[in-house]
Amino acid sequence: MAAKLIKGTVIREEILAEIIAEVKEIKEKHGQVPGLVTILVGESPASQSYVSLKIQTALRCGFKEVQVSKPDTISEEELLALIDQYNNDDSINGILVQLPLPKHIDDNKIINAIDPDKDVDGFHPVNVGRVSIGPEVCKFPPCTPYGIQEMIVRAGVETKGAEVVVVGRSNIVGKPIASMMIQKGAGANSTVTVVHTGTKDLASHCKRADILIVAAGVPGLVKPDWIKPGACVIDVGVNRVGEKISAKTGKTIAILQGDVDFDAAKEIAGSITPVPGGVGPMTITMLMLNTLKSLKFKLNID
Image (cartoon, rainbow, N blue to C red; front, side, top):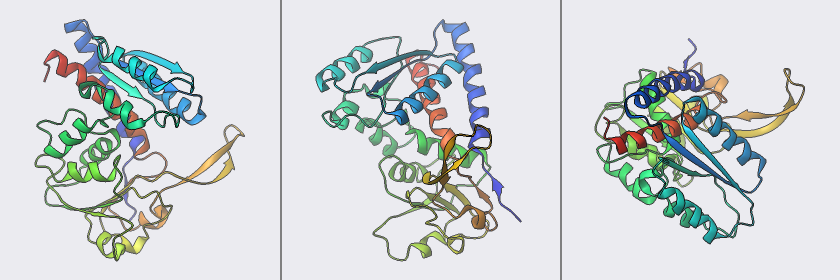
């Protein structure tokens, strides 16, 4: 029997509908809406496309959206001054600087300059620490891990006592999702193993997983015989493996493949995310949720 598909495109729409309704209610009661500033440096087509999606989603949610574009010749000092401006702007609840930045600008210095209480990406060291401490102090979980956890919960997968194996140890996905899944509380309370390029016998660890989260960036890394029958498989990988002509537009588009051999895995897993249309749509969605949460913290709304 084929696995249940956990579709990020569907869950995204559920969450965005909830955000839109809550923003409307807050606006009616408090006369305020979440404010998000997106800062784009340079003219990278990929960054422009991603920022455009963030702007469209913010406007759809009823946010105040401020988009700032700067040339790649901007100095680090000028960018720091711009961040300071929005740190002190009471109408802005979330600050997002699109990465990567030009080589003459230190990414870490820029991230560290953002007010942690407006760091809706969840990248500031203060927010990284809050994730480790737990949900009682964590304001903004990083968006992709936050989306992964939300997908697992909304798919009805039991996490309490589950064996979770995370393949990959990146600061953006692997480490934070491991920290989140070991916490006490709903959607977590799991036993977590993190495996990586230095792990011996990767397959044996994966075979134990009730929930297998794969974020390695290696197309087709996880083979079907690595998957425990009935397991929940979350494939975070989005790897460009070729190109094809779109039947809809006639334009050349990328062929994307996940880190899991999807066609074979779906015959073994209990539930699985597709690529594309799985984890990807959740990242921007959770960015919107974090921005809404920032306004709610400011207004002392539970």
